[in-house]
Length: 378
Image (cartoon, rainbow, N blue to C red; front, side, top):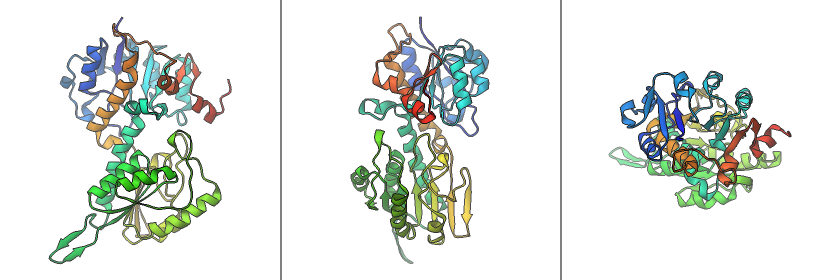
């Protein structure tokens, strides 16, 4: 029997993305899936209902959820949404279990199968499913545009009748997907770019994009492609070297984040105080508290009328069309291998990607990473 997929309106404040786009909807329908979407759910991402040919448009969330076997979401479900979802359904989206323990507990009670997009392993086969990377690329791009908008200088070198304007100096801290996209965007805008990451393996990637790599002598390569936490001595050594470079920067873009943990504090108040007057910090790690100790997530502050510190949240949502397209394709690539010829869903827990992406199944937290982080032993 064909599975019934439900895509609701995202009700989290400021969320403009949607977990479906017309092209993905068409592919799912061709596979025999019954695709349903809440009325007007995609308007915030600039997709009208009529663009979803073959999709059943449902007037209310309650009606949408009532018979849904599979649910695609961007943000974690709320308690009110969970009350509408039938027991045993499968839900796929960002779950943020570290922040939403009550939500996780309620999903366990309802015996939901929960696939968390932030748990998708960063292996070659799962690249097309990696929503953290697709959304981080957007954040890196937008972060540089924010920096350019807030900056008091041009990014490119300009030769004018009034003389030559020197290019801006931009420093990108963190060379993950967001950081590499920030480097590429800043270079396209004509800035002189320096980059830093505690993972020594990123040097070649930064330099291939035209950035000069800042070598602090500290390496913190960790498991799964993420950085490990630094010792106090390593943090001090890192800050001493970075401080000299940051003091000369026009714009600093910070992107260093560890999923499920507070963002590491890399830029101290003293470092900010020594920056050039008119300098800008765009802290893309604000979701985890920020890489700058002065960052106020969700706000833009003016430190001592000297440095502007911008702490944007949910940056990918500011580019909702392409963010939704990329995210919907991530979901499709994760789920489609397990859709049968009759349009049913048969999850194979022997599949490496699926086994590592599952958060909950049969009322139990299955993720090894989350069990370890939360100290779950049963």
